[in-house]
Image: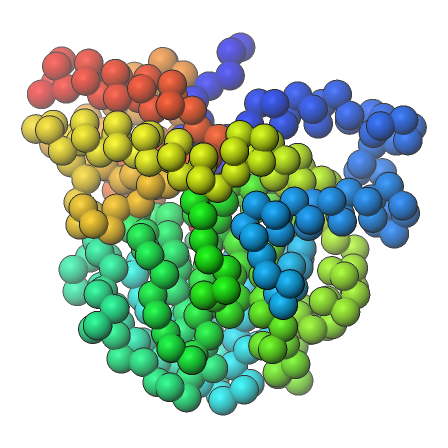
Length: 360
Ligand code: PMP
């Protein structure tokens, strides 16, 4: 069976070169006589993998020295609770900008841990845009301002880092980390599950500025206390070793392709191809405000939703899989993370052209 073009929102397609290397190293990692899965997390082999993985991520994102990089378990949904547990204690308050399903979930979870306010929301317009920064109501006493940089379900994305003054900006970057250059110094904390642009599910990356540590609520479990994890080099509990290893291979692969600038160019080219097609089509439609469209997740609707099933069956027959939209938005969604090739997006557009010719 040839490899399919997998448009899954996550866990998502991974670079074939990374999968091949992992396969080659599966039984015997570089003469160690064992698989990475079998290594003690405190042994010299895995400690080396861990250190190299962190160093490569630091290099790719140019992470300043006053930031800790943590490799944790729990995923981004766990972080929705872990972030406030660790950060809200400074003032007891936090602001949330709500732009779609994922930021709604972050907000809802945070309410348990302090006084949480909605600084801005695009709910009234169906989460199809990012509220302009000058419409936000920010509390200068908030411990942090939370955003979701890319709404995986709705397909809206920030194209710029909002200025929150002296209040630390916290971003859920699960679905667009490593897709473009970012200025880490503009953020207080960044978190992301790995299973879109970085590797398999199981590892969560947290990048946190040093001065934000030390305010954890007393109820914070030690395994989720950023300061304790930073002191233990993310090894307070057993880290997700194999997922960290694969993430490290992905980071090196991305570096070999030219790093963040090259990823941004590649992702813009793919997104342009798909949006240009959608915009001229009288059969397919994307409903997101053009300025806020995601380069990673492209939801679209057929003119006749009764043909959704026919569209998906035809796509599968051409090796284009996982295009069904999230039930909240309906229709279709193409997730086109770093590892999706231009060829994959071309194949999708060609199929959509044929479909429109036949059914339009
Ligand atoms: N935030 C965003 C932006 C996501 O896309 C996802 C997963 N699709 C999550 C949070 C939740 O991730 P997890 O299920 O790994 O906790």
